[in-house]
Image 1: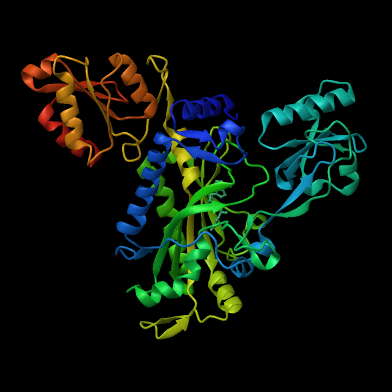
Image 2: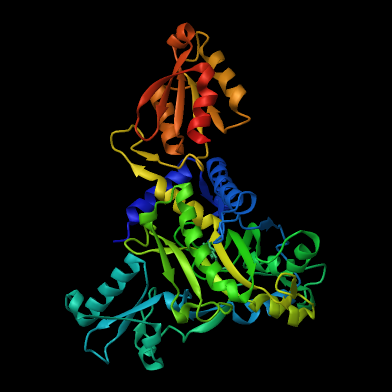
Length: 505
Ligand code: GAP
């Protein structure tokens, strides 16, 4: 069952502890936009840095046992608008939408479900938003009221938009409507945000906010080849914002209108693409474990043929790394896609821009457009998976909950506290803090009861808390408390750096 209570608790903790706030909250917010607070920013930066470290600075060994070659890039959010014609986004980046004439709501057609009474071909249908429990139970209640009977699961007929003919839509009540026949047929809707470059706001000045970071990489493929010592196979990585005017932003930061992606375009010879595809699917699924997302909550799922993006190569296609989010459980939701884009993008840009983008492979003595394997991860969605994974209820703690972040991504690595804010204890604690803060993100907090300070650190997901007490003045030893086990041990004040080095690396 979808665990809505857990999701509500996570969203509330994120707000209360300063991980994530609704954007422009004091003006009532703006649907699909979020701001990251102090802890959220640190968490997001840690996920981002872990990805960059493992993909660019210290990439994994490839199928031949040698480290793969990956370089970084930071391209513009706004590019020449012809880029998006060539990439297929202007023509193809559409979701079929259904509007409701009565409620004025707009729904993604493939997110609508329909409910009728089994065997009743002329009676009304009732639409609901799939994955939204309250919408579904509302539709069921409306159906029961309509047939004037309580219905069991076996009495119900469920279907998707593909089974809804014009005649059926005419007798369907929308999810937020009272009358039947107010839903339109599905229509295309472009997801790109449009803006204007320069003083004049006419079509010649129109431009788009990028809907993916990937195209900036394809545009710079030749620049990178000409200026770096890269040889195919190699990858170009980029992390940055992407914008999509999603019709139904929902589930906190899972589907938002402004979000961040961590994308790798890995260029290889077409013959080697299946080998690299397999390599990246496996490598990327395993990577999430290095930041604490457990394997049992992850799934590698092949896209069905009707889900493939316009660039995905037949036969190789796309795999999604999926995570069991509380709102999808027991099912899974997409965290990252690994696509075989063939040489679609480079050939489209070569054609539309009239540019020579072919690569000369000296070893093969062959000129060709490389194929691309693209692991494309959501940074914002990654942060959500990390938050969901870390959220742990524990009624025995004063906070009732703690965030079990992997130390690699924990926003604060350790708290340093004097037991009381007097008697020379703050001086010792703040000296330790000053000595180590350049190396680790630490929090020095001399105020409140020690229980309250531990509770705050539990909610922030801080793996260790060091407490200086009267004994420290005599022996030099302080107490370290482990977040997950609540075990306490003694460490000399001169060994705090070594302790953190051992635990955090
Ligand atoms: N360049 C390929 C590409 O953009 P995608 O599957 O559309 O592929 C990749 O997006 C990843 O970006 C997704 O797996 C997801 O993690 C993230 N993502 C996509 N749309 C998003 C949205 N509206 N909000 C948050 N994350 C999103």
